[in-house]
Each structure stands twice: as structure tokens, then as C-alpha cells.
Length: 262
Image (cartoon, rainbow, N blue to C red; front, side, top):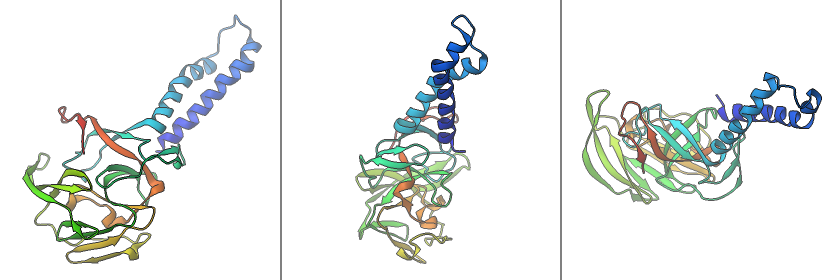
């Protein structure tokens, strides 16, 4: 469901009714006559819908985490906020950038439109920038030939299935963040789709190597062995960017999950 398009249409319709009443309809029915419901309701809702549309399109947008691909940073059920202007101002609905502000940085947690189906919003971590060479070899990340710094953390307990995963602190760009690695999962990518610039990647039993094309980004989930990401479906074009995730504001299953993350 394209909620931005729905809000846009509602804003236009209620705005047209409000304008028509101000310019013409009010004069036709007289000053003492009561507004009919089909005028009263749109006029009442118009400012509310307009404010929500503006805030959601240009300032901040709420999302709910539907999967465990970003565990332990984000867990299923987290309601998060996404900054819509960090990477530039975009025209709502068509998502075309008109004002450039900042570029995504390695380590950012970013929401974007899934390249195979732009009606779906995905969330992953930016690992590769345009021009980068990304290697994931025997479950170790290399960016432009340099291995990402990593240190062991206490094992992570998955409460939903009562099991543990190896947990590490990994530095991606300037961001230190936690990742999960399953020791018994194969190092090779289990399946790979055909995607634009597929020839930029080489896969083998130990992992893969990809050269990120201009205007695209390489995304990976923090739950490394349980994330379908750029390793599987390819690069994310700049035009698919939605915004930068920055804050957890609610989780019904874990009320203590509140605040910023990295």
C-alpha cells in the first residue's frame, strides 16, 4: 500500500473542497445556512491530513520492523523513526530528489525501496558506497581490501527460539555496531538472483566479491546469516532511498526498547 499516495490524494480532495467552499459554495448557501456534512468533514480533516502528509514526506516517517534480519540492532516489532531529509529533499510519491543534503555513509541504517518491488520498504545497513569493493570472505567483511575491525561480544540469546548466536562488534565506516554470525551456516551465499550489474560480483565457496557501481549502495543485515540483502538481490539505486533510521520509539513485546541506535 502506497500510504504517501493515499495521503496526497486525500490532501488534494479535501483541499479542493475547502477551496471551493471558501470561493463559491459558502456564498451560494448564505451566511446563516449550516454546512452540509460533505463540506464540513473535508474542511475539518484537511489541515490534519496536510500536516501529516508534510511531516511524513519531508521530516520523519514511522516504520515497523517485520523481520529479524537486523537483529541485534533492531528486532521484530520495533517501531522506528526514519529521518526523511538526511539524504536530501525528495518529491513525495515519485521519490525524486530535488535538493541534495548529505550522502549515505558506511554504517548508516537505511530504509529503501526494494529494487525488485519498489512498493516494499526494506531496512539494512549501508556497507558499500559507490566505487567500493566489498568482500565477504569466510564471514569476515573487507572494504576496499581492508578488513573491518571486529571483536567478540557475549553470545546473543534469541528469546523467540531459545538459542544462541555468536555476537561481535564490527566497525563499518565510523560506526561500531553489533552483528550476529551462525557458526554452522555455510560461508557461501546459498542463492543469488539475477540483478542489474550482476557481473560486478563474483561468488565462491568462501563468500563473494562485489564492485559497487556508481549511484548505488551495497546493503547487508546485521543478522548476517539470516538476511536476504545485496548479496542476494543486488545493489540499491540512489533513487530508491527513503531515509536514515535513527530511533526506536516503541515495541509492544519489549517495553524497555526505546531510544537511538547505531
